[in-house]
Image (cartoon, rainbow, N blue to C red):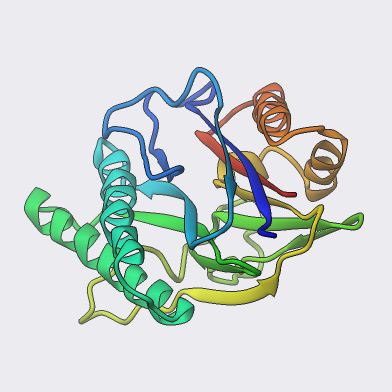
Length: 253
């Protein structure tokens, strides 16, 4: 009998930013380039009989370039995942090739707009029948809550600098890197699904506002993925909402 995925997605511009540079890939859809996030969570409940991909993107670049970068990445993921309906593709091979394809799309959009400032982070979960893969570039994160243990599954691709604790560290990996500069190297890890697992994908608009123990408490106390998504975003806004905040919450049933 297959596992059931109960999932919810919510995206908010925040209290400071006028534009939303976040985007996502959820239930085969993403936001348009110009958007104001979501007024209400979108949800889905699916049996994991075939592969399923979910992702959060956080655009960078200022002006309108951030939202263009995150939209380009989300839109490209939409086309990349269509191959899963027609071909049997090894999971790691698919994730690596998908990241390269999305990176190429963002770089092409850079050249079209005559800018080198445009880029996006990515945190993704790839579900198969019995396993889940986490794949990330940048500092958008993936977490898992299992049997009371709250664990970050992703790796923050940030430059380590001493004496700059208050300043945001530059990213060492992200979407929008020219191949001639250096190759992107997404972090990919595999884990086994278990009943009761809870997963979270989020942009740094959440993790900059809430500490890990606060996220843990919210995820532990929520009865559904939708309730959890609302509580996480509301808490980030209450703490200041200094950035766009996007969350995707998943429960394995």
